[in-house]
Image (cartoon, rainbow, N blue to C red; front, side):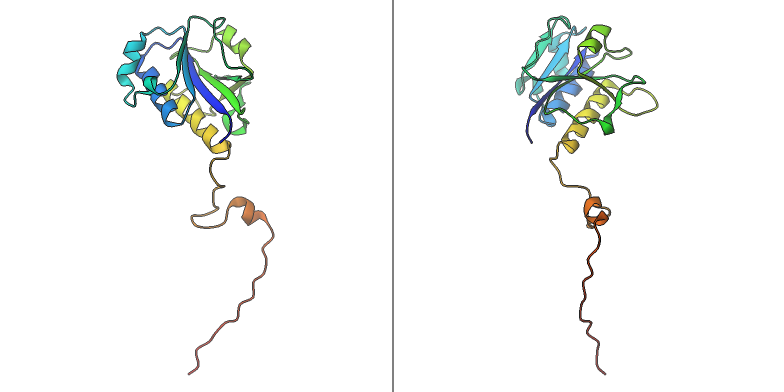
Length: 179
């Protein structure tokens, strides 16, 4: 898979959620992880990080949105449940991206929303846990960036693309039993 991605959170307040996102990012092959103005101590975040993600991928802590420094040509993608956000299944992930989620029981700050190149949402009835949202976004990136073959129409069958092509007729000689 080409490109890279990182994921982070703004104003996070629960250590377990940060640890979960870091561990999930590590598992999905993220290249970096970051926080913006976290309300928790980094050492407390590590408690729920059972994969030691903080020891295996770069972690950046920014005091503010203004202080955030992303790699060159990296698109910032906000994940926010708003009416005009792009539905995740319709979103074409940038090759170089940093995804940012908002705090529990809150939203991405107006300053961060303004800085985002794209704002996406998971099409659900209501918001889910920030760790779950991060996992869904990373999973969608993995699927949509072409790492896996197309899904078959049915298990063991042709893919939807192959099934939509005109079928070719194959003639077989049928053998019958002679009595």
